[in-house]
Length: 62
Image (cartoon, rainbow, N blue to C red; front, side):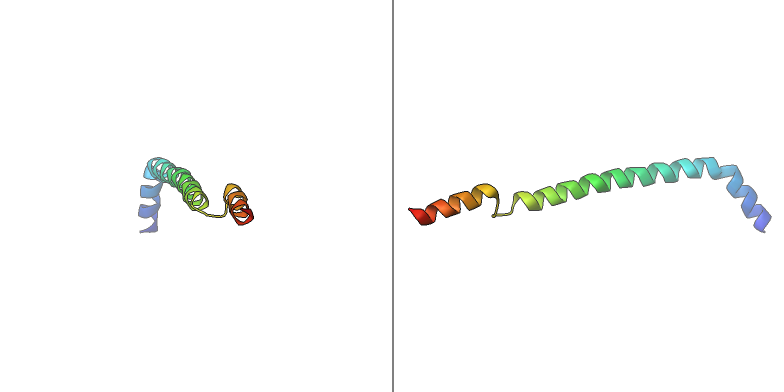
């Protein structure tokens, strides 16, 4: 039984390797880009940016 499984895997291993590597790298790339956009979205919506702090300080002086 193990010999049959081994022969089947060795016969089809090149196709399975290409599919797994392609899928893995695609997942890494899309996950990395998604993480960047997620962090950028949260950072862009923060109210305490440098400009916001500058304007906030000026409103108390007037």
